[in-house]
Amino acid sequence: MIVAGIVGAGLVWGWLLVMFVDQRPNRVRTQPEAEAENSSSRLVRYLKTFMHKWQTERRPYLNLLAVALFTSWFAWLIYSFTGAALLIPFFIALIITFAIHLTWRQRLRQVRKSSA
Image 1: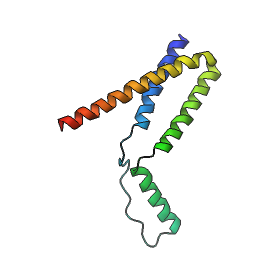
Image 2: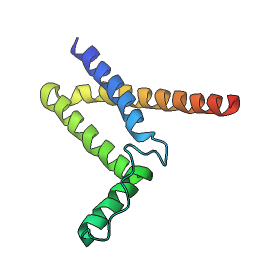
Image 3: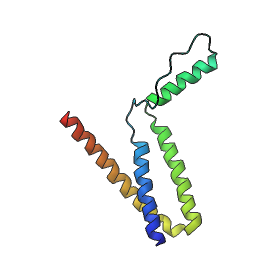
Image 4: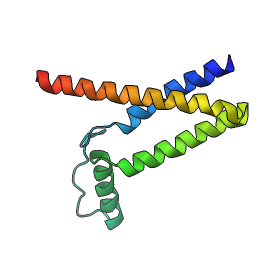
């Protein structure tokens, strides 16, 4: 029963990682702020510029860092509750789900481009 739960966690985790990593570039998550006013301090202008850049550009190194950090944390939780042996089915399920979901999303994009 525990192995099934670990495999299920790996399947869900791999699916969520694709949702996080496979983001399209130039996707704005919030409405862009109006340009910084001249009366704003230099720090406020810098922060507004940084936030706009962070929200509109693709950041593969940040995504990779976040994926590695959260996956390591999740694997540590599994290790601390169950032991090292059950990390193998977790990572196998994670890799399989990640590959299948990423391939499926890319095919959906290709179909959408060809039909448009």
